[in-house]
Image 1: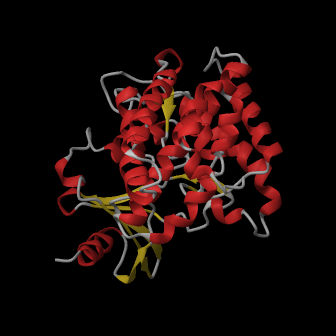
Image 2 (image 1 turned 180 degrees about the vertical axis):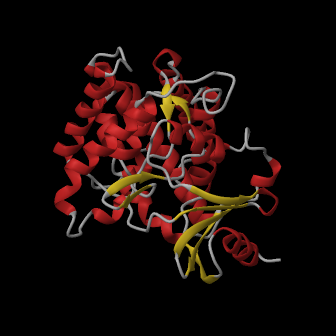
Length: 334
């Protein structure tokens, strides 16, 4: 039985006979999404091959959905599921992404909307739990950060951008990446992070933000998610708004007792995290373009590279890596 037929069976048991099942363009993920429409409305079906190999206690989406829902965070409701068929049926929260607000009639709402979303982010970052259970048992440790740097090396430097950097320069760059990763491993400052908190993973539904794609949440510096939102590969905020939002995030964290950093320290880790996060994103875009043959991400490579000089200028800790990356940065205009 095809995925669509299995979706139709599940939808029929909880709603009504489906009138249409339409594939939805997803992000850089192995999961598949479909909009299912019936006489009484629509829902979104998610097909994930990993579902039937897990239990409710170990399948990350269900664990995180339960956690976020218990803390009254805005996530789509689960309507039905069939683990054997790898299908979840979710509330349809529309297709208006935060990204789509830019250059639209809603453009004027962006500053207030971003402050509202940072309030939601801090609510997520305030959640704590047992360190032997996901997501609190996993973190942006050095191994994870280096996995992301190495993904960039493999699919960016040795793939998409080859042969701009030879093996000797790549080896020197990897050494710098290790040093940068070590800077970011500060468990005493770690909070819960969504991990992909950007404008394509935030829907605007009934004029309120709804958070999606949260199943990869893990512990890390609070700046990681703030970087994803403020130094987004898909939209570029006005610099003055970006600075205001950094301050807003910091003061909201501090006011809720979630950080003991000074603001200068916050900004330092923001820039180092931003460098790492943007490099990681470029690696993903190169992989999607060259290996997955998904060209929808290629146009995001240059805007993401354009952020890098800002961090290199601000932080001496990044200058050696920046010098080695110069062949990629030549001609980039921020």
